[in-house]
Length: 113
Ligand SMILES: [Zn+2]
Image 1 (cartoon, rainbow, N blue to C red):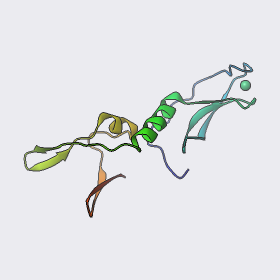
Image 2: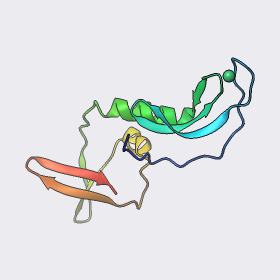
Image 3: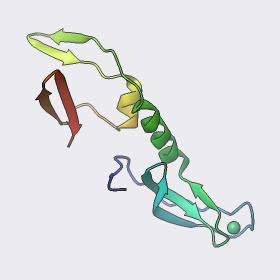
Image 4: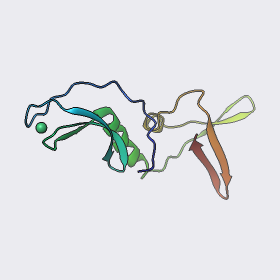
C-alpha cells in the first residue's frame, strides 16, 4: 500500500499446503495488515505469510500506537538519542545508517531514507 518494507527478501523456500497437499508458490507483495509481504500461495486459496515479515508488520503496527520516553545521552559534545530495541528491529535500523532529522515546532521528526 505505497509503503516499501525495509526487510530483505529471503530465498524462496518450498512449502506444501496443509489443506490439499499441493506445492505452494512463493509470492511477493501480498497484503498483510496494510503492508505487502512475501507469502506462499496455493491454488486452493490458502495463503501462508512469511512468518518473519508478518511478525515485523505486527510489531510495527503495535509500535505505531505507542509513545516512547527515551533519555538523551552525551558523547563528547554531541547529544545522542537512544532508540528502543523494538523500534530498531521493527524498522531494521543498523549502526551507521543515515536518517533525516527535521525540526518541528515542539520536537523532532526522524525519517528513514
Ligand atoms: Zn491448497
